[in-house]
Length: 54
Image 1 (tube, helix red, strand yellow):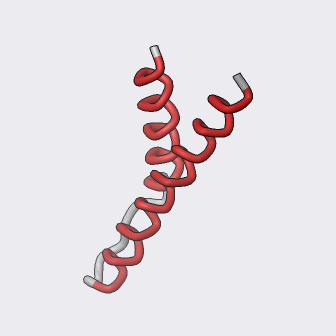
Image 2 (image 1 turned 60 degrees about the horizontal axis):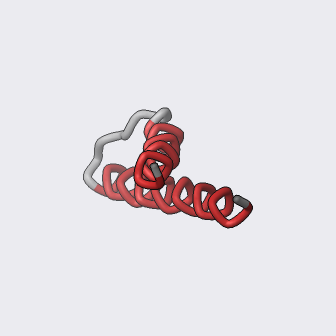
Image 3 (image 1 turned 180 degrees about the vertical axis):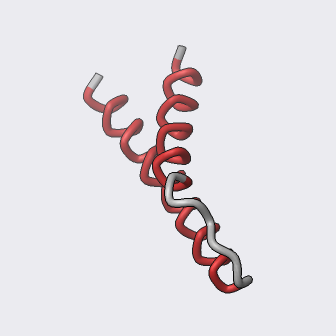
């Protein structure tokens, strides 16, 4: 159970990192990504991992 919790947190950080890359690339393109993009991706990562475990 502890390992699943750690894996859930890792999935959240991974998806948030992907959102950070998207945010950075959007700044380079001259546009701004919304501020809620990073927490949204983290939540999607956690939910996707938990659904995958069922």
